Length: 262
Image 1 (cartoon, rainbow, N blue to C red):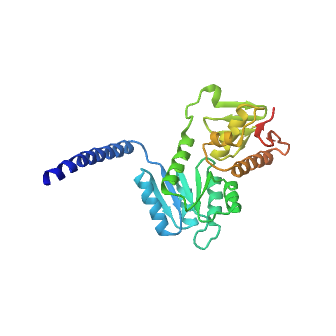
Image 2: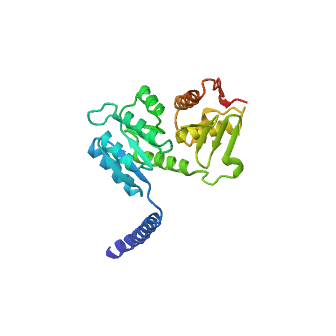
Image 3: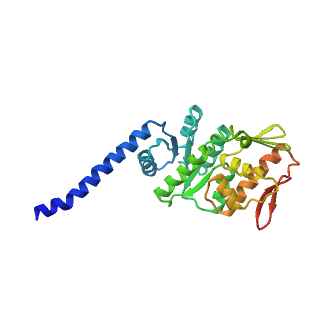
């Protein structure tokens, strides 16, 4: 009986040792690459520490804050590579919204995720209009959260070395510099989030061609519903109109999507 148990246990031990070695190899490879810095702004310590532990295990560097002012002070000293923000922060019912606006004013490219218990359409639309790249509720599974974070980082790094032909798009008064992720209208800079940048890039790349909401979602590498895409497009239009009251180049094709006017 003892010999039989040893025979059954031996393959498991071999697989375990091989897996352990594999994990060590992964950690060694990760150590050669600078860790992405993620800020978590969450006033409930147990939730904040739970998210932090999971992210650290996945190779991220994490800084946690329990209130808006501490987070804002830290962001002013050094921007995170990605921020996860709750809406209600201590005594500030909408403190997360204010923090998002402040962070977006500092950087138009830092990915921002709202992670909150508030699941109303009103809060979701408000969060996205304030510049967030994603809006998630706290019932999301941890693997799903990790996947969404990884997708935002991939999107930030995608097409890092485009060809000269693709890197600069000029359409009448519009100029898009993909290398610097900058958009200009009549030589005036338009401050866009990463999500908004890729949407306008997809539209302007092929003027006159209709892009469905799914096409824009794929271009921005986000997974959201149609109403969220609509909110992003409205926000993009508003930013161009603030620069030029006569702006009318993003056309709605009802039942199909959007196109850049020719």
